[in-house]
Amino acid sequence: MNLLYKPDWDETKERYRAFWAHEYFGRCALAVSAPLDNPPDGPPLPPRPATPYARWTDLDYAAACNDDHMRRTFYGGEAFPVWTVGYPGHTAIPAFLGCPTELDFDTGWWNPIVKGEGLAEEVLKLRVDRTCAWWRFTLEALRRAVRESAGRCIPSIGAFGGCGDTLAALRGTDRLLYDVVDRPDEVIAAEVYLMEMWCEVFDDFYRIVHEASEGSTCWFGFWSPGKTYAAQNDFSYMISPAMFRDLFLPIIERQTRFLDHTVYHVDGIEAFAHVPALCELPRLQAIQILPGAGKPSALHYLNTLKTVQKAGKNLQIYLSPEEVQPALEQLSARGLFISTWCRTEGEARALLANAARWSVDRG
Image 1 (cartoon, rainbow, N blue to C red):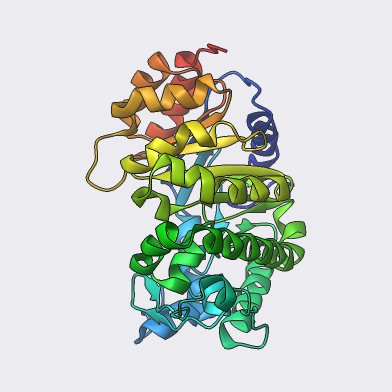
Image 2: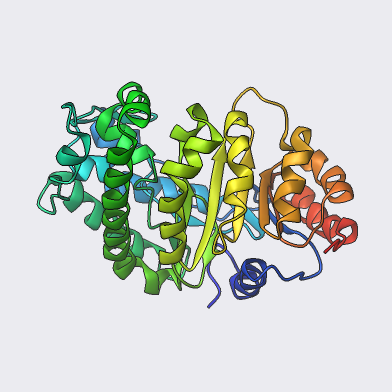
């Protein structure tokens, strides 16, 4: 079924299926967006709500913002329109477990609640509170996303936690850095428990969105005909490869066995040290290499990019339009996913055509 804001959606889904299977379909995967040349008329955006809480919980405002953005945007190649309330942390597992969640107009954060010496003992007592306000809001938002998306776009399952990061939210990053040295067995026990909880939460949300999504998408913007999510462990930026392998890699492996399709979000150059370990995971299909704010383009780290490709994994990177050709001169287009943006619809369409000419399947 094609979509109002993505008229070639049926073709796009087939390219995603080929991408996940690591098949070459004539060019790299390329998600390119741009302002539409002739966007349809629509109502003006309502004023932003007066408080951060209202800004993130007013679903009428969210619907207006989603529609305004999507009807003005060209979604080329593997780009597609996604309906979401945003990801400041109010629809995530730490909030469901009782972490006080603070919001501002742009983002949000949690305050830790696991403060005693018995890390695993405290974590294993925690339960998702399916009566709490944030859980009830999240289900309402997902159902609204499904209704709003019908025939127009794809509802996001959200961003609700990851290996290591949920525990860091519950414990506090500084305290967890001591824990990984002082009580590694307790960290592992807590992580095993939290990942099983994550899988249960995913299933709760997936039951709401999967039919409207024809599968699923999440905060990452990849689509899958089954269960997909972007695994991550931003906490790993601060630990050694050996510690990452011992404490967290088995938990990530569990997540990949639960999902049909997984991309791992490697965020920041210090986390690049974990790429060899990630490449060993048999059910991890794709790895994103993201240098981080203030760092050079991903192409500056060509050895890391080629490590991913040599391991037979799909690779995702963000590039400027001008970097697409140099990337395709140095990397195999098989399994390569480039996300970019253009100033005009015409430039985006030209880039898609050129990418097909520049792409080479290097195995």
